[in-house]
Image (cartoon, rainbow, N blue to C red; front, top):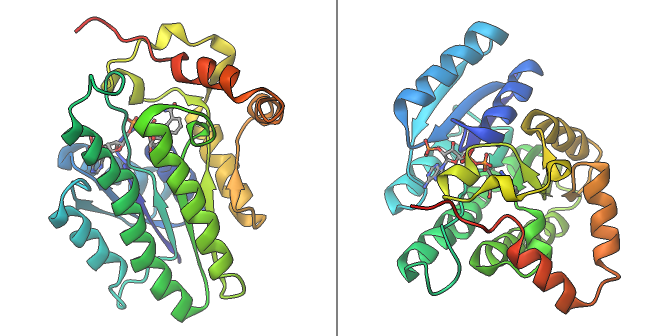
Length: 257
Ligand SMILES: NC(=O)c1ccc[n+]([C@@H]2O[C@H](COP(=O)([O-])OP(=O)(O)OC[C@H]3O[C@@H](n4cnc5c(N)ncnc54)[C@H](OP(=O)(O)O)[C@@H]3O)[C@@H](O)[C@H]2O)c1
């Protein structure tokens, strides 16, 4: 039996990864801040799929939270075979309207936590000669979109770079870059999701399923959905200024406070 550790497993994409990986027979370690939701999710995964599911309560914007998960990932007695660095969020509003501390918190969760957890997991995996890491980035990594897009661009570059460094070690790394996915993400950020055209929305379970398949195929970058694959192809042909105008505004209308 293999074990997968998923950060941000209480909602959205992380919960979808939990369902998919439990269905495939992986035991689970579920990480997030909300202990009650974590316990409910673990019980549901055990009851529905018969896997062992444990919880680790950790706030990945804190030193203590990151260290707790690092310790779990380096516990030789309970090896983790697959790490999904999924926890993330968007800040409400555009640059200068967001307090700089909140932007730094984002960099801690999206970059520092991803770097440290990848390092902790991949080291043990390389010693065992097998394992996988999925780092959830975003299509925003490829277009101008404030601190959020910049942090996700770091995730893509970091993941593909480490994948090259570890080639041949038995450890696979992949950056997952979805477009808009129906989750709690937009509501939490106070975004008016109604401003996003219907065809742009992806289903979280389908995104998790596509990611699992792409990792198995040895991809280092996964862009789920035919429409988004085509969109990214077309985006490469557009002038950067046109792309910047469209990408920095789509889905960035905010609901009244
Ligand atoms: N939804 C989209 O359109 C979309 C598109 C592209 C990429 N993504 C990326 O997908 C990932 C998952 O987002 P989602 O859409 O599934 O959002 P979501 O539904 O809001 O879920 C976010 C998850 O992250 C956890 N989390 C947030 N801050 C955390 C922290 N400081 N420490 C630990 N856990 C934390 C939350 O749990 P707790 O609140 O219990 O901690 C929750 O389980 C993110 O990295 C996001 O950037 C989303």
